[in-house]
Length: 231
Image (cartoon, rainbow, N blue to C red; front, side, top):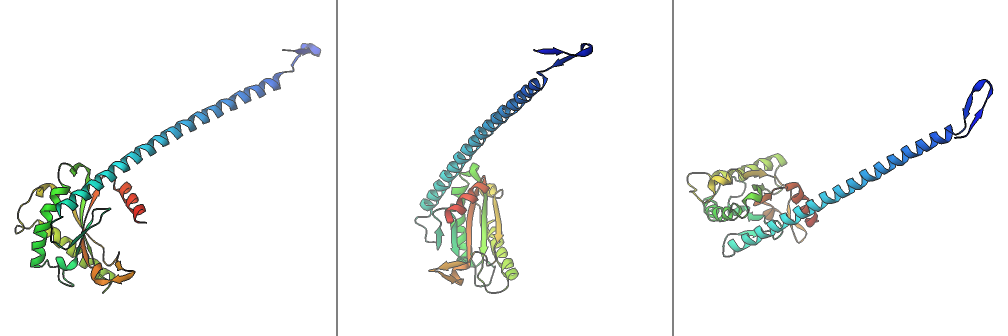
């Protein structure tokens, strides 16, 4: 290092500013490298998580498709007035299959229809093949637009609950996976939300319905996938 002698023996270090700049540059370069390394690790981790989520979505879609296929096979020869959604596996019944108009008392014919349907339906969903992927089995009630929202909300909830009550009544009889079903089944009422349109026109009779649906584990993922598919 070059130095210059000054009066009274003082020595001036001419390269000190340059050395300080070099230290600052090295520090900044080190920080930049650390940031690049952190960014690279984050990108790799995020890519790995996306890959895992994609694999899980494909796995769940495969399970759902398999369940829909099994339900179609199981009810192929059924004479019940029901529709199976080919994408979600939701099973829809016209309200008249179980209830009289504006009533939540299960009709005698409704009880008969329920006894024919539930054991077969549960034998598919609660089978060892699908049970570990199952999160919930939901009985859903829907009404038409007649009356207030709260009145129809109560009516739809009472209808859904009446179905579950009937399934566990002594008159219903025992069936396979009866005890296991208690861990999964629930009842929901939706009032006149989600009305049905036929050929672009609102249908009051079609809006009055009872739906049996199932939810798989990771329901948030599946709900997003189903919403995207519906759109």
